Amino acid sequence: MTTYRSKPARVAAVALRMALGAFFIVSAVGKLLSIDEFEIYLFSYDVLSLRVSMFMARVVIVCEALVGIGLIANVWNRFVNVCALLMMAGFTVFLCLSALAGRTDSCHCMGSMIEMNPQQSIVKNAVLIVLLLVAARAKPWSWKPRWFVWLPVVLAPTIGVFVLSAPDSWLFGPAEELYNREELDHALAPEGELHPVGLEEGRHVVAFLSPGCAFCHMADEKLTHICQRNDLDEEAFVCFVPTMDSTLSPLSIDTVSFLHNSYRLTNMTFALITYGQRPMVFLMDDGEVKATCHYRNIDEQQIVAFLNHEDEEE
Image (cartoon, rainbow, N blue to C red; front, side, top):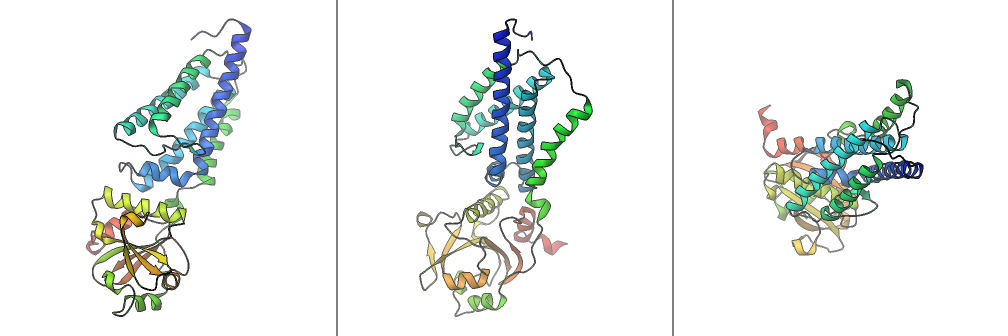
């Protein structure tokens, strides 16, 4: 593609190119700042596993950052132009499929800074593609950096993203049994608060969540998608919410924001069982806790193997 002939057009194209580069970098930073929501959004499509969703969320951020840096650097323009357009085309196809599937939630294209549904983001991408085509005719700088100059520039965002926000699966494994055994046994006893739920028989994923806790809601989303994508028994998932009420009582879907079978549990019992930590998730087999999870170390493979009794086959 030939560059613009007039000097004002060349200057404007370079300025537009740098502005687009800055936009992509801001978009990448926005996703990184709300990486938890972004990886759950990818996981919510029930295509990628939880671990792969965590990894791919960071790959998308790195790609956006590198394209942004390439646009601002204004060198190797043909290669950068192709990468930018292919990236935007891929994003747009993904958003079109989301719109056709009826998704209306935020696509996290700008992280949590600006919420846009797939339809709005498709329009944004169309504008960006047009601007990228206009800026593609910018005249590159005559100076071409050597490999020892550009290599650190490429490695810095790539390594930086995974260092600043490493995937949880890289940092957190299955937890030790960190819970108040005495208080839990008391709550499960025939006269205890948890006895009517029937946790003493069978295998359950028991979540202790608070309605005002953002990580509790994200933990509930993780568990919901793990259940759906692996066709697990929904009745095996139980949620307890702290309340001032003096007795255990079930909650209908209309009165609680969590998606699983939910019960009110007195604040004191809730705090004693969880040591005041929330979210807290127990994998329970006939009333005995086999594993304890918080938001960061919820493991899809572990939960699937547990509920399908695959651990007994090993």
